[in-house]
Image (tube, rainbow, N blue to C red; front, side, top):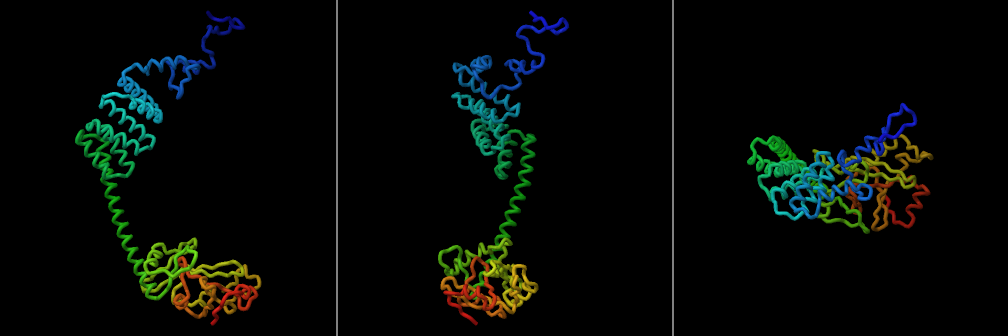
Length: 374
């Protein structure tokens, strides 16, 4: 019976009928017209759905029948692109105890497809492998396994799976395309591996030549970090050179040029002002004074007293083990300094300290230390 409206012209509304503004939502709440099933069914609020669910998945049904129903449910979710729920439905089907190997292979293969869509390629491959064991001629399982191997960049395995599948169906398009792509990518991978091997061999030869040049010059290296500075053996020197780099942001390294000369990254420290300079490639036959002339051609902004002139500077290196300082002759080359019996190259980067001659700071800095002057 229709309810009377407030006026004679109002559209009559049937008792328990849908509201004109929300009829679509109300219609979709009826199980028969639902486009998607809720993730969780509340029996108190959705008794119709709970009843249907109990009818569908009645525990009294045979396990194989239940497994088939879960397979269909998973397929429905897969069609809706709800791959997570599809995986759960297929998994529920696989939990049933039934002896139909073909149905189990289908569930595994379908779960592999859903896992693939989720990007879970290893899980998908495991399912495809199990499905293939149960049913070796299950073409979809073979296709999915081959595609998983492609995603995992296992090109040799992908080719092997494609070969197996093409024995089942020589015209399977996906397998033909996957095999062609895998062949090409495998060739590229092998080519890159050969290049990398050749490059590694070349780099190793360069390291060995570099190490030989350093040893030939009697330059001493130390390993960092350590509580005590220690001269390293030849073997440790080689290990050190494998990762030879400076602490600078540039990552500059000692290198040997075509003429057999070494160039080092060198750090200049100015303790009084807590400043530094860094030379990425200090040729071993270059003199310190020549670099100072370039570095201090213009006074640095932090030298407010205008004291840092090349002629007004003294250079030292520190023997930390003995707490001793050694003054350097600015006219000496880098090689002459590195060959000093107490000079140790730390972290692949020679370092020198610069002080203003006879400055109060240098006197305080040298206090308590033995200083070997020129």
